[in-house]
Amino acid sequence: MGKSAKEEESTILQLERDLRTRVEVMAKQKRERKQELKALQDRDRDLCDLLCARPYSIDSSAVPSLEELDGALRGVEQDPAMPAGSCVLTAASPLQLEARQALNEAVCAELRSRILELWDRLQVPAEERDAVAPHMTGSRARTRRELQLEVDRLEELKLQNMKVVIEAIRVELAAYWDKCFYSPGQREGFAPYYDEDYTETLLQLHDAEVGRLKHYYETHRELFEAVQKWEENWRLFLELERKASDPSRFANRGGNLLKEEKQRAKLQKTLPKLEEELRVRIEGWEHENQEAFLVSGQQFMEYVAEQWQLFRLEKEKEKQERQLKKSRQIEEEMLYGAVPKTPAKRRVLGPHTPGKVRKLNATSVSSATPNSTIRSGFGTVLCHSPVSRLPPSAGKLGQSARHPGHVAAKPPRPGLKERNKENVPQLHGPGLSGGCTPTAPAQRNYSINSVASTYSEFARELSKASRSDTSSHILNSTTTNLHC
Image (cartoon, rainbow, N blue to C red; front, side):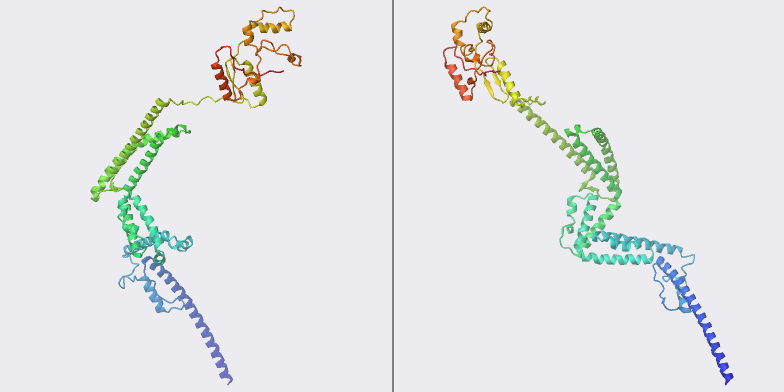
């Protein structure tokens, strides 16, 4: 029994060792097969990306058997699109691989273009665009699949936002009309552009029209760009011509006037050269395509001739308007007189200080000659009545009063004395007893009561004087008593 137990014990231990050894061998095989499967899958994925083929289907979670590994190896080394036994990696297949890769790149480029177009039409936010950004480069099969999924998503979104998409396409269509110089009649020829029933059919019609115009523009891009250059130069020429007829341009500084004149002279030489070059190119294009090259609905040279004709008519119209304006001005000057070009001198304003005004009035009144009209500092017109000069005897009489030793002169005639009684100073009376020194006898004395307060009084006094028969009648003088 003891021996049997020992043998049994040794048998169990040996079995355990054998099992452990076996487990270790199988674990090693598992790791090796997993590594081999991973390498085959990576290689298969790379080749399938290049060849746009389906990867070999195998369960990655389970441990592959030798047969499954062998099948995966054959799937990697054999082209599924070619007959069995034809190896892709042979020396005879590089041309086929290059052709397939070129086709894959073209498909990916078309998908990217469509994605960008739909992004713009649908106004997709930047966050959604960034999610697809990693697949916007490359041409592997995985990239192609991701691009196709994005196109499908955008197409479905487009159907949900039909009106927004159609309006965006119309903006793009109008831009191509401008690039291709379509006339209003040609634009009206596309009736769906004015349809307000936003359906999928309308969307397809717009897509087709945009595609046609895009192809037409890209085919003749160089010619359209040359015509566009002529259009830009022509608009600049018209702008410079408009500035040349503006008189205010002479007030500008900084040399702009000289620059504009040089640029205008240069354009006058450049435009005919561009027109001749375009004429030759358009004739060649029409001969090659057997159709007329139209700009705004007419042939280009006819369009150019029409623009020049409109320019000349506008210049002639401006010339006639200037001549008509000048003739009207001459007629007005003949009827009403010429208007001075230079401004009149500014009138010197009087002083605003009351003291200075009074002083100025006193000086003006005292120095005014008879039969004169004086304007005071306040704007009032003072009219002096005609007065006679004092006779020389009056001055001498005053001198005799102050200088007793002086011999008195001959007394004045009675007629003159009566005529000047108002102007002769009162030498005897209370006026001489005051504190003021009397003025010289030869100086004329005026009375403040003779100032005409209104025009009616002045006219009444003037009419009385005109009706008087005697020449000795004198209007009241406009004078002021001067006091010290």
